[in-house]
Structures are given as structure tokens and as C-alpha cells.
Length: 249
Ligand code: 13P
Image 1 (cartoon, helix red, strand yellow):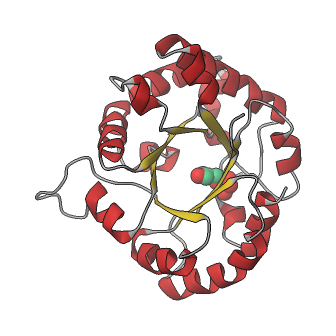
Image 2 (cartoon, rainbow, N blue to C red):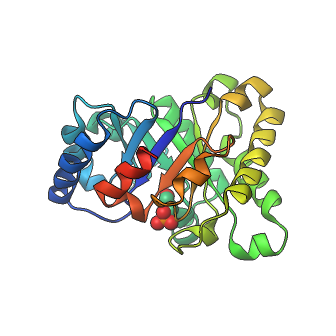
């Protein structure tokens, strides 16, 4: 049985003060939620405040990106060690917004995944096709390239520590969710890739989250698919009540 994961990606939203207020509302709402892992990814500047606010709870804090080098002359970047010291347990890697707007490639995604694993962080590796790619019949080709590129050269043991997120770009922030069937089909394809590259056992243990306009009113249908192991939630994770009702679907 794969343990579900409900993860919130705040993107570039919330100050430290807003983060504290959010967690004082969220913590009591998910205190009894032992059926899944709960992860929240604030922006860098609110990480320490978030870690402080969830101390003693089962909520984990993740960063939204990291550099692959341990340290160096890389203005504007943050390393894995810095995230670990701040109290992060996970890190989102290669979100489609990083791919679209900040030059993320499968090669840099792979470097980040390896560096995150080496630092003891859980990488949440994101893959997903553009609308034009789906309409052009290229979904599987894109997912295969992004998956294989992202996990290249990982050992089986390392692979077992990652979380995968399928986020079709056409469903992100658009209010247009993939149907549970469309999402499950992509998840099945990704799991077959994992089985071929690693082992069927490791593939069976891989947690694959769906992301893209997940809301309190569509989470139940998505989670009814055995292939969907949780959600990576953007907009609806910004309100504690909405995110709690997704967690407690
Ligand atoms: P929305 O839930 O706002 O569509 O964002 C999804 C996402 O990008 C999560 O990483």
C-alpha cells in the first residue's frame, strides 16, 4: 500500500507573517489526519517561520527549488544544505514553471534530484506535457523524456526515495483539471517507465501525485483512482481551510 501524500505548493505567495497565520489555522484542521503525509512548500523567505510553526506536528516543510552545488559563486541560488539546516525535509524539483520561465532542463532537474538525495531531502520531481504536446499526440514521448532525464543514473535505493508529480501544464492554474481517467492513464504510463528502468517492486512503491487545478470538490474523484497517490496543490493550498479539506478528502 502506498501512503498518500498531500502537498501544497505556495509558489510566490505569502510572507512570514502570513505563513504563521496560515499554520495556526491549518494545524488544528489536520491534526487527526494520519492517513497521509502532509507537505507544504512555502517560498524560501518563509521556510524558517513555517518550520517553526509546524514543530511537533506531522506536517513537513519543503522548498520549491534548490541548486545542485553544495556552495559557490551562484548569486541568487540556495543549496540543499541550507534547506536541511532551515528544517526542510523535501524539495520540489523541475516544476513546469521552472521549466517554462527559468530554463530548467531534464539535465539540470537530474542534477538537483541527485543533490537533494545526497543531502537527505525527498525530491518531488515534476513532469507534465504542454497543451500543444497533448493535442499533438506527444504526451507519452514528453513524459518518457522528462521521467528518464530526471531519474537518470539513480540507484534503485535512491529511486525509492523520490516522489513523482504529474502536472499537465494545461491544467495548472487554469481551472481545467485533468479528468481522473486522464490523470490515471498518465500515472500508469509513468509507473510502467519506472518498472522498466528500475524494478516492478520499486515501481509499485513509487508515489505519483497529480497536480493541476486540484480543489476540495474534485479531490475525491481523483483519489478514487488507485493510480493516484495524492496531489500537488497550487492555488487551493493557499487557504488553510481549502487545503485541509483536500487533505481530509
Ligand atoms: P494549481 O493547483 O493552482 O493549478 O497549481 C498546480 C501546481 O502547479 C502545483 O505545483
